[in-house]
Length: 210
Image 1 (cartoon, one colour):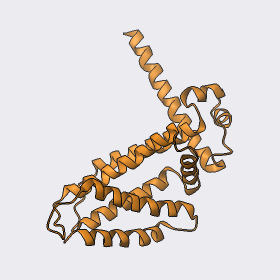
Image 2 (spheres, rainbow, N blue to C red; image 1 turned 90 degrees about the horizontal axis):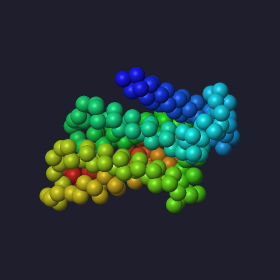
Image 3 (tube, rainbow, N blue to C red; image 1 turned 60 degrees about the vertical axis):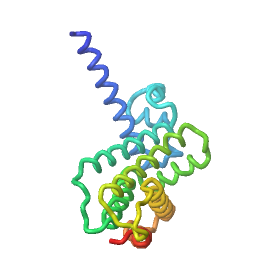
Image 4 (cartoon, rainbow, N blue to C red; image 1 turned 180 degrees about the vertical axis):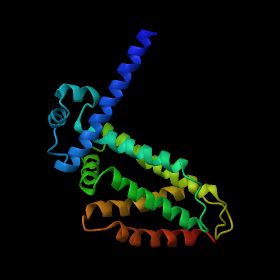
């Protein structure tokens, strides 16, 4: 029993240290920029050795990816727990969801950090970073799809629709606008929504008769 207790304590301590590393890295990435934040700087801030940081995360990009993935996982989990979206129109449900995507993503990281993450993905398209980063795309598309199939909608051609394809189209449209948002420090969320949402409304009006 004592041995099990010791193992449990070590596990909790390891998890706590991991969370401290992530929190410290996120703060330094935002304050100093990713390219100037070294693993040694994170270690010094936490009062541990640099090899300790590398024991948890093999590189700075792994640290960045962990913060992004875990942030999105929390957002997706919160979305699942919220009351079912039930606006008068499908557009309103989708508009609210996409707005949540944009707002929550900017809570995970600021625009400059997102620019670095996207540029890292472009520089290393075959890397493990990109493969895991792409998980976000799949999860968000599934989230959109779940909203599309939750409610019966009559299409203008009086038939069904391919929910996977439509979710992909909507996600890619949102993603294009989100990239434009993070590229422009002067562009506000309100302006982002004013560009994105009318186009989503037009798209859904072409498909559905509500």
